Length: 158
Image (cartoon, rainbow, N blue to C red; front, side, top):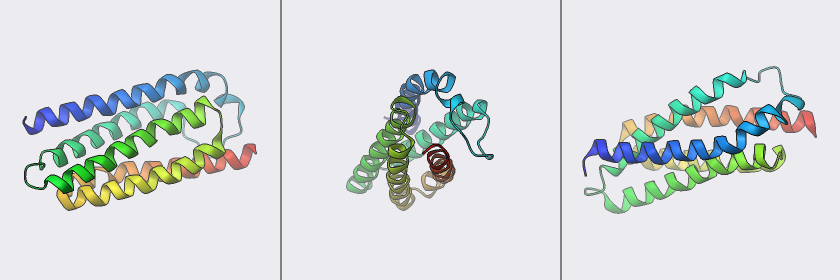
């Protein structure tokens, strides 16, 4: 399988995870989310979909680039992709905790774990392919911001 096919498969997986998370997010954005207190730096709702779409594309390209090195660095690639799948799962779980269960505190604990797993994935990807590592930096930054936003929402609504 060539590099483009691997990136395409990773893109399908990442976008499927994003879509899955959006199915629980959308109803709460229209009902529960408008009723809670948010900090002054809370972005407008319309910004989240394009940002997350771009981040999922970056993640998919990164995963595809790493996957493409499986013949040269089999064990390292398998381990790196394992971390990638763990963080991707945690990424989806956050939406269920925050928007599905409407539990900012539990989501805050989970997003801290998510950020650590993204960092570990970045570290592993960077050793295999520098560009793949660099592609995860915007994701790490956005999740750090999301963590601050999550903490603020929890604090303001406790």
